[in-house]
Each structure stands twice: as structure tokens, then as C-alpha cells.
Length: 282
Image (cartoon, rainbow, N blue to C red; front, top):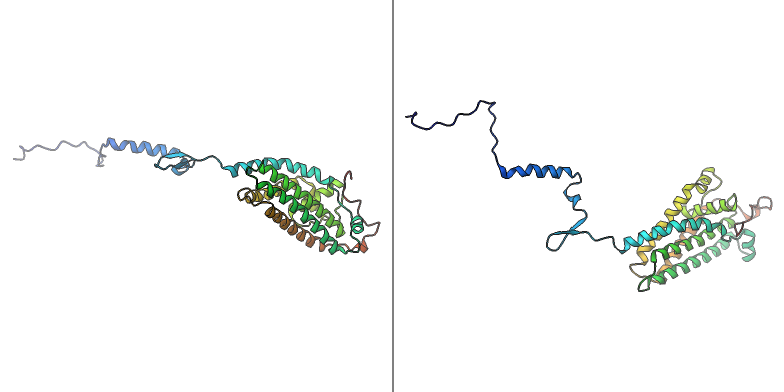
């Protein structure tokens, strides 16, 4: 009976491993996995430049918006204004202590410093009002350039304030006209009073680092004002308030630092007084 039944086909001799089924429809999976592994960024990263449309298809992402383009233009403008600030600062007329006391007779150091701060905040507020009014126009002309120009104007007003506060507190910076202007710009950049009697601070103020930090400070201030003024069209009033607040805060910090090292006027004899103050052609 067993001889009449069909026998199973003979199996080849081997190591007893089970034979893998031949499934043509699954062969493509290996290739797809290989291709996917070639893209080290992964599937999600490869879709970073696309978004899903209403029907589910992928569409290219939108180009940078108006704010991004405005920031790029402001950065380009600032590169020019930094050099302009460094070159212009030594030509800003700064009154020495004798001139200040003659213009404001009968005032002590703190009262005189109050007068200087009041005038400076009024000046920066005027600059801020101008740029705030420009933001109210239907199509603000070259707003990034306007903001960079405003920042330069504010920096020069605050620079003059810092230099004259040094006169009031008997702490005029040493060195030549250009060296002193670099030191006062370094204080504007650091937003604090610096002790220029230390060699390390002189190296910072007169080295290339000061110019880099100056560019960063100008950039920071302009980039902060750009999204505040442009999208909301806040106008002259808010622009003036912003600058007045920032100038007052800077003055308070500078005065606090200078007050700690103040030299009384009575100790500033003719022999000990520093060289002439900053001014045109000095």
C-alpha cells in the first residue's frame, strides 16, 4: 500500500536551515530601505522645505517674510553706521567742567548731572518721535535704514552725555581725543561706567573688541525697535517714550558707577586737571 502512494520529493542535504520563501512582491522593501538610509537627515528633514497643502500634497514653503527682509536690510545698514559712529564721535563737541559750571552757575555735581540727563533724554526722545512718526506712514520708506539712522543719532546723544558726566564727576578719561572717544563708546557699548585706570579696561576700549561689541549693541538696539515700531505703527509718542526710558536707564547706571570713584571739584587743581575736553579738531 505504501508503495502505491506518491512520495515527497527528495530534500537536498544541508545544515537543516529552513528555506526562505521566494516573495517577489517583498523584494522592493530592501531597496527602499537602502535608499532611505542614504539620506542621513531622515524623512522629516527632507520635508523641511515643504508644507502640506489643502489636498494633502506637499507644496514649497513660503519665502522669508517682510520682517526677515527688513532685518537683513537693517543689518547691512548697521555695518556702515558702526564705522560712521566711530569716526563721528571724536567730532562731537563735549563741554569740559569749567564750561558746564559757567553755563549752570551755583549747581553742585548731582544737580548739574541732572541737567545733563534731562537734556539728553529730551534729545533722544525727539529722535524716537521722528522714527515713530515715519512708521505711521502707509508705506514707511526704508524703515530699516531709518531705524539704523535713529540708533546712530541716539548713540551720539548718549555718547555726549557719558563724556560730560565724566567731566562732572572729575573722571575724564585719559589719552588723546580719539582714545577718549573710544573709551566713552566702550562705556556706551557696555552700558556701564568703566574704570579706565586699569590697563585691562584700556586694552578693551582701544582694541578691536570694542568695535565688535559696538556693532552688536547697535544691532541689538535696532533689532529690538524694528519689530516694535514697524508692525504695530505705534507712532511718535511711543517712539519718544522708548528712547527716553532707555537713555534714563543708561544715565542712572553710568552715574552710579562714576559716583563710586568721584573726584571732588575742590581736589581738581589746575595741575591735576586733565587735558582739554573733547571737541571739534581736538
